[in-house]
Length: 138
Length: 138
DNA sequence: CCCTTAGTTTATAATAATTCTAATGTATCT
DNA sequence: AGATACATTAGAATTATTATAAACTAAGGG
Image (tube, rainbow over all chains, first blue to last red; front, side):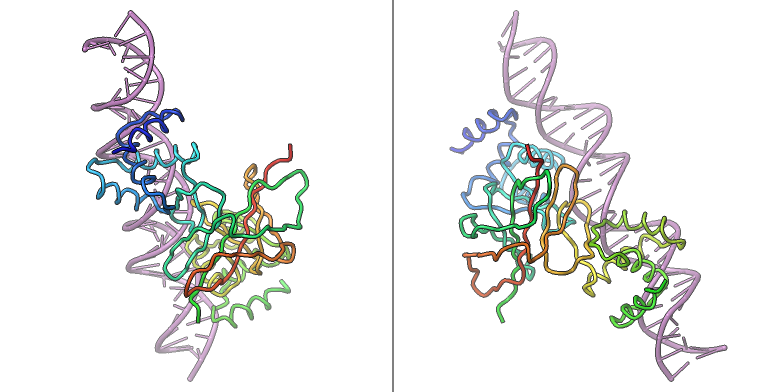
């Protein structure tokens, strides 16, 4: 509960009213310092179990979108059927283990500089993301 | 029409019966030597215009999936709402221009070696894909 | 405090992409 | 040509997501 105030401030500072639903979602997402990858369905399930309050599906969608706009969450495009979200909004990369569908962060600092020789006129690079597929070692 | 035989062989060799729908889809997808990025909806529209025959939505889905299994197409995860497919199945990378939603191939040879320092026990790297977001040059 | 109001939540309906189903059609093999 | 296994099809079913409109609540002023 010690963090609730922190989340209230965080929400208020970014123009979102600190409702009990949003605070609870913050607690679920940000209370542990680890990176957390999730789908909306998974998030709803966790809230149901871990929190006492009931939060509607629509609110979870709204809140996650609001958090993405504010930069608290990032969407990760892996599968084009369900949206995956990431609490790690720093510039980083991903392993994806196709065997178990597991997604693992790679720190930005663990990837060497990337040299792209193609240039597109009138455009500049905004970000570079590396996506590494894994397989079992034989 | 000179290519039809080629597609018939291609399909047959990979255990797919060369039906007129599949041949037409091959022509639409592979007749030009350029890389082609598309959604199912776009593909259906092109077939409707360019070909005389009518192909049901279910067949387009089935065929695209069959082609992915055979390695004729690759799925590209960009947006998590519609599936994008790519006729370029070689190992390559992508620019994505968020302004206009345009996707541009980057040849494998135009990207320098990528150094990933993180290791996952029991797993080895299967593939590395780089995804570069573009923005307008100020 | 109480009132107002603008932002939120909610259940439910609507939409959109994709998959399933079961009937009909067709390529292939003998 | 006939049998059979594979394909196509329309339409229904499913799933994720978004929209809607009514009920609720946080914030600020009196």
